[in-house]
Amino acid sequence: MGVRSFGLVLADDAFGRDTLLGIERVMSKLELAPTARVKVDNRNPVVTEAVRTMAASRPEVVLLILSAKAGSDYVKAYRQQGARAPYVSLSNTSNNNYVQALGDAARGCIFIQMMPSPFSAVTGLARDYGTAAQRAKQPLSYAGMYGYAQPSCWCWCWCWCWGRGWPGPASTHAGFGGAGAGRAGRGGPGRGSGCATGPASARGRATWTRP
Image (cartoon, rainbow, N blue to C red; front, side, top):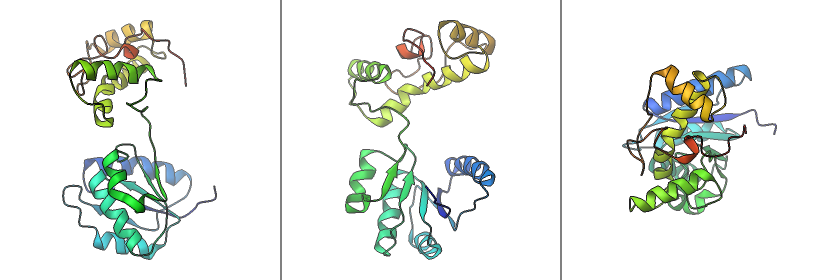
């Protein structure tokens, strides 16, 4: 889209450092460098100096790698400086609390949502999660969806790396056999369950298609 100038706001923790590795790898290939790179403590979001530094660099767009609370505090303070660059945040930031806390400052914020909506029954994963949440008597939420889907993500990795194929019944069994593992991940309504006992879409019961 012609954007060549970007700023980077990172959480001052392991998540921020890990995300930075991926960003730097891609941006180096594009021969791009941020106009400014600032860090914010997710646990104690003091944003004044970080906002001042970013606003002075005048980026065309800003990548935001923060929690919902720190992210909303930062964006609102940035807008109060009169700066209008769009903000792009990862799906872990893109929850209801973040959007509601932003209020009018949400205009110009872009959310990358990799997971399907937990409130929609369109996808198999959302239906499986909804059933598990109802059984566990838990309300539907994006956080719950992420926790529930974690075993599926590990399953896909094992199937691909060890089973040498896109996830399905054959590669699932080969994947877990090669990895010497019986189950993967934990969290969400299906806590403690893995590929063999977790979401139906991770057990080869669904129709598997390459995106």
